[in-house]
Image (cartoon, rainbow, N blue to C red; front, side, top):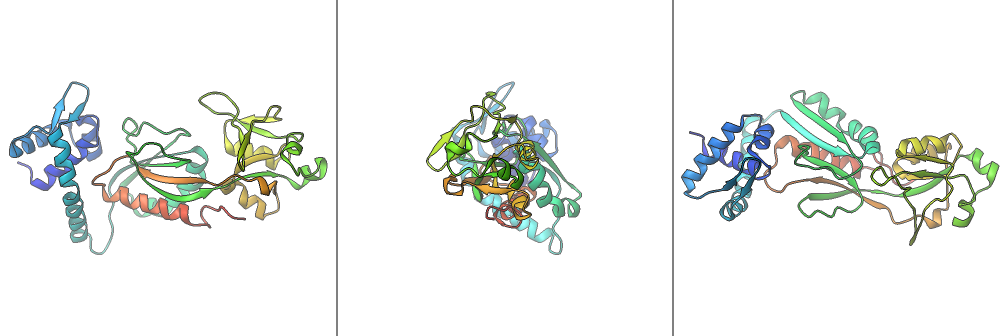
Length: 303
């Protein structure tokens, strides 16, 4: 027989999963253990918590209400047990699945988590780089990072930073072709374009109140860091995220142009796919990321 805290933890994890197998993966146990725990809790309550099928599970109305009633209690119990079992040293164990855009994942997430990874050897960081919103259940994602609006209200999201877009070129390129003063000037200069990996189309450049799609770009890529490299080589002007270009602007390797036309900065969100109880390791990584992206030194947005 399981203790009631364990039963609540099994139930809450299963409620966030598509199947008992998914829940077992998160808790590092077997699907049979999850199934037995749910059955025992249902017997104690005298109500069904889930409708089962061969491929997925679905909560009953009673299960949905019970989850809502038990969430706060389970969170308090988890905090109580954490405080009583690790008074001197934080210990994190288990997997944390993270999804992030390629450039942010490589250049920002890894440095922010470096200290945590060194001090938490029992915690597995599983970082998936995707420029589109990932299937959080199928990919076992605990934390996501996205630039732009999040349209799924199932996410617990925190706006942690801003991402301005800047048009930049090298001093050498500006001496060669002149500094563009208007958008029309810019379109007669060598410019780059970034390809949407889903549609294969060129992303439009965003300006204050309007957009413009490059018609005759000199360089195309589906990767923002490669587009940055083209700008640093002096081949093109590019419209690139501020956190990528600001270090080079400060070194004098790139020059921002058309500042008066810059669009409203895009929001950067750190989000969790599910509401309810969250393991301590996920809360810790979530906090590290939200604080890191809010820090101007770690994630610059102002020259």
